[in-house]
Image 1 (cartoon, rainbow, N blue to C red):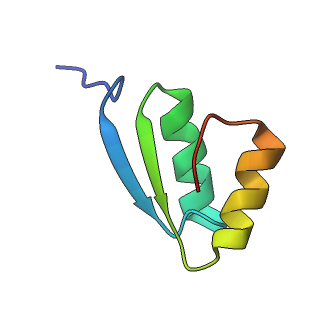
Image 2: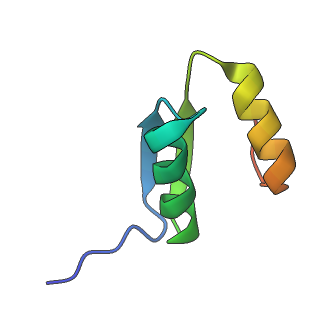
Image 3: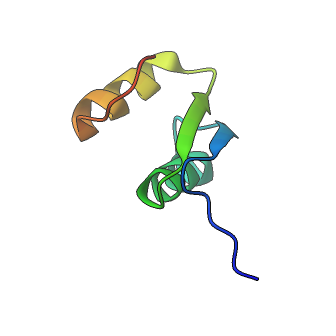
Length: 57
């Protein structure tokens, strides 16, 4: 049975770079509501601003 992440809330740690950032982008692209966690909040803010994402950091 195929599962979907549409409208699911997913927490991604290490979301400011690397695998965490890529995972967060893909989950958001698939329709998940993504909660981002990282030590470098400045990096998160920069990424959210660059992507013009609907997000709060």
